[in-house]
Image 1 (tube, rainbow, N blue to C red):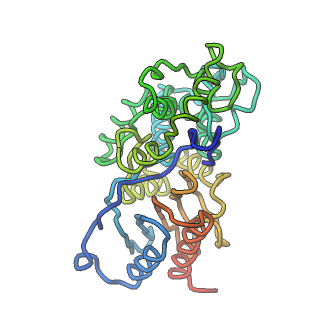
Image 2: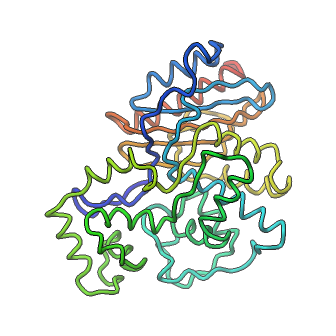
Length: 352
């Protein structure tokens, strides 16, 4: 997700992939020093920031990881289990993917996505909402989808029921964005979705209270909060959108690729959405000439996440890469993710 900034020191409204600086998931003595493990370890050491990764070839079973069980801020990657749950509910007749959903003023969210640029009253299908949640990481679509599958608690019940003990959806997009303003003033917990979008988009006409945007912007000018927001994003998991580990994320991707969730047909639809991804072209797919289905999560300039399925000639390879505390060029960090994916494909396929 790319951020939108109101003014220097104001809220970055795109969600990112930050984590507490992770300990190694296994010690060097515990992780077998296979050629793939050495490759992954070397690339992580070159990465300009803290990172965790898990790589697995689904046909050979060969895998390698660094900090694979460390908890990372999921950012938009947590949208994957929301998608899977939606298809599971549809298979039980509890959700109609062809149902039309009207996008009202209170539904619009800032940050990434395209729905906020359309006129109010747009009527996409639930399937289209899920598609935009994945391929443009649309935040409006995300909160609509979370509501359709039964809310945050329902997503977490699905995660636990499927053995994802460390993965959690903490809150909605709206709650995540609003919480940042509450750091500045607890009274801002009363912000409505319309108010929040008015502040994020610098559009006073959207607010329910005259002068609200000007007051908040002025307050932020006098009381910059970026340092505290960054600290919470690095160190305070309850304030994150969600929590994922590289290893558990690999299991989700493997289930989609193998068709073990819901049905083969449902998994084919989900794989198609991942392959229609419109973000993160400089990450996993950057240097590859094989198809890639993936989902990003980012907060420039500090965070870049990407997880996905690389359709190598030797068979599908699932990769989950989470990072935080990027130093220096954000583009260089994205390129390192792309270079790791290239080296992994070369490792399994050879250079030709």
